[in-house]
Amino acid sequence: MMCCRGICCWSFIQSHWETLRWGIAAIISGFLLFVSFVPYEYDLCAYIAIVPLLMMSAYATPSQNFRFGWLSGFLFWLGTLFWLVKVSVLGWILLSAYCALYMGVFLMLTSWWWRRGMIFKNINHPKWLLLTPAIWVGLEYLRGIDFSISRNDN
Image (cartoon, rainbow, N blue to C red; front, side, top):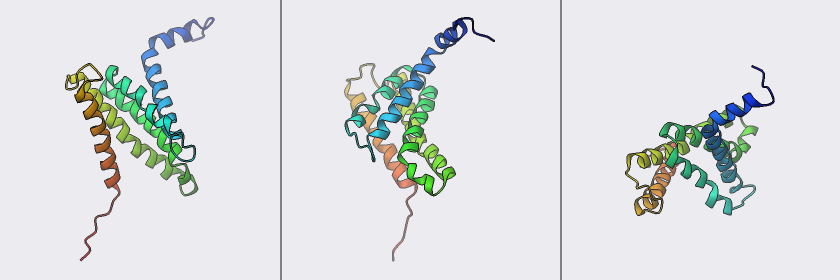
């Protein structure tokens, strides 16, 4: 279908604004997380990087949060694991996609708890302030032990 002076494009943007807005937030968060680590090391970006994602978790559905959290994590890990390209491009993409699952699960869980009322609608509520970092740290711990090898040194 041809757009007549951008009318069709504008109606598409209007009808998909929520999805576009959360997609942009996910891309910005992934980029900010990436530049907060080596080689750029803009440390302050880490403090604001997940704010758009946390705001999204209050308004988007858990499945949307998983998708956009995964997108943000995928972009972050693609940038962070860029050195793997010298070894394997396929391995770089697959490992980035795998590690991104954790950010998707994080946002899905926070959104689920937010929608179920387990976290009150006030973002300054102690449950929100304690549970959200606990979810993040728990998933980071699981990600850290995923590739560990259990050894029995006798």
